[in-house]
Image 1 (cartoon, rainbow, N blue to C red):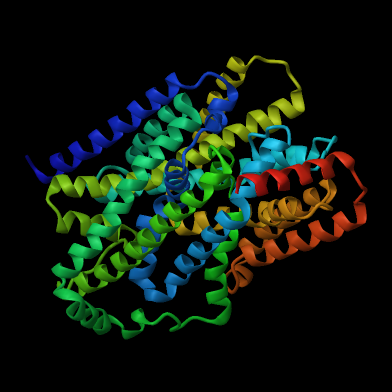
Image 2: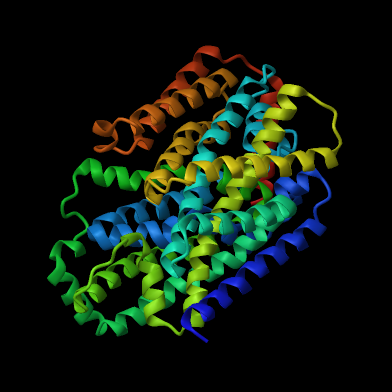
Length: 493
């Protein structure tokens, strides 16, 4: 067998496993709640690993190691900010959101939760939320497809567009048929593959480059500042990187896992598993980038595309079949995020736009069918956006991440902790946050100095707070639900 056949065999086995899980989940999906939220039946390990895998995307194995390879440890501030943000998300959002979404009309999406929580009769809040999710997730999904195309191009020399089509087809299949359960179960497998790959490559790579001391020396010979956390970074640059952590509070595809966990008691276990997985995975990604610098210095070679450093090192270090499993880890990162985003986008289209605007009395079976068609339509639009291959993965992800963090983050936090937030406050805050990100992120003089999530998050919080104060009217039903959620939280924690 040639090397490529071994690697291709590993990829085929991986993809077949994903399709099988999709079929298994399809057999367990009977209604819209099953399709969109898995019947609120996830255990702590599935919650944690699926949230982590959905979160990290191709950025973890391609974007971050590539950034470290080019710029050094100064890029690790993003990883630090993300770890802190994810931990706070588990502490501040997970328990309350799990309880409140069930207390408030058993909501199964973020827009439906906000509408029910704030008793918005106009439907404007739900519709605006659905539109924001649709816009930013279409970009986000396209970034995953770009990563998939790059993966097959760098790994097998396959045409970029052919790779994009292969990845898209498999993800669309298991997401379209298996829904939320398929996405969550495949995320667990994908999260484990990513985890072990990100531990193996740095550990074996250090020995390959001569041990820790020799590796460090080689990196310093390229540029001693690569091992400096603050070299060449401004205060605003570090703030921008750490501010990625703010995005967690508003990422629908991540916080929806908190809504689906079986009980509040399981949140602590999920947090320990999730943060442990995340810390070690991010650490492995950072070290992989540095190992790449040392390897190419020692071999007097250059890497054409820094975002492929993980893929190339895996092929160099391991037996072709093991290297194929390393390659499957990249696919796992890409596909887990695409599928999670597709299912949330589908729920936004059907649960929050179609049902809210058309107000039809269709059956659950018809809604599930429409949800599947929504997955297909969004996928096709994302494929069109990904087709030119003219944007970096990190650039697309950072824009979408900021859009969600600034639109939903402050609103979610205030809705869980402040009785007086109003529907008008939440609506205007979300719109202000989204517009700020869109403008700031597309003006290079602004986004080049400060990540757009920072002004977007602040403006959303300020607008939500002051508009809510101006429009607040006591509401007995809201107060009752707020108190009930707090009581359940105390009882179950």
